[in-house]
Amino acid sequence: DNIDPVELPIPKEDCLTLVGMCMNFWGFIFNSEEYVQHSGLAMGSPLSPGGACLYMEWLEEHHFLGIMGENVLWSRYVDDVLVVVPKGMNLEMKLHELNSVNPKIQFTLEKESQGMIAFLDTEIIHGDRAKFRVYRKATNKECYVHFYSGHNDRIKRGVVIGFFLRAFRICSSEYIEEEIQQILSAFAKLKYPKGLLLILKSKALAIRKRSAIGKKKSKDERFITIPNSKSAETIAKQLENTGYKVAFTSGKKVGNFIQRKESNVPFEEKSVVYKVHVIKFI
Image 1: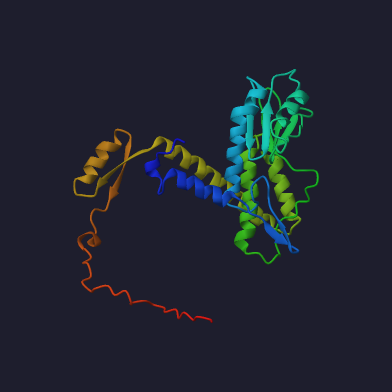
Image 2: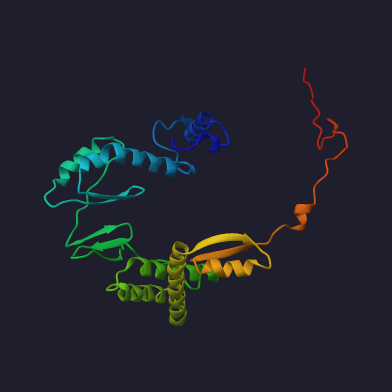
């Protein structure tokens, strides 16, 4: 609703009609039987995840947050919700109210146990301040890419670096070393050389540091773009003293001075690449 219709390539009504047509799943045929989907969104459609999230946001705004009341932290990622509530709240009653909004949107309840609760791949530890470590399901077998598999070396290295990056991103300082040892042990069983694992750990740490520095720079730095010239460097130094960074443009290029001339060759309607012969059957 907040989009300026001028920014759309087609009228808003036409755009909504096209989106609606793309999101409708008309059905499929299996074993000569035709099936039609009566509700929900089609699996595999690029529009389905966005549509589902928009619907959940609408339910939250108009129903769920009102049911939970004030002084409640409601954090959702797709279909997983972490809720922090005041002590003494009747969670079973709240669950019943939430599930009464839409019979097709049903929640299950998992409470904190021994001061810990899992949310996605993070285990949150309750205390004076929240602490975090990587969460693994009890059924986790750690069956990752084997070192002697036929996968490309870049894929193998990327998998290991990804695990280290997750550890650096999630774990509190008290649990980071425990998680690193877990990663080293898991991939050692898959025949990864320990020296390679330590190298990949260092690369992951460097990536993490570069990312943090890049975010700080992008937040702190302000840029001004000026055309490149003899006096541009002097101006740049003066501007940098005020806290601004300067980016230089290269100026006009040769292509800017060359204009295409309109062709004077008349257009012939019969000038085509292919010709289709129409055959009439009597």
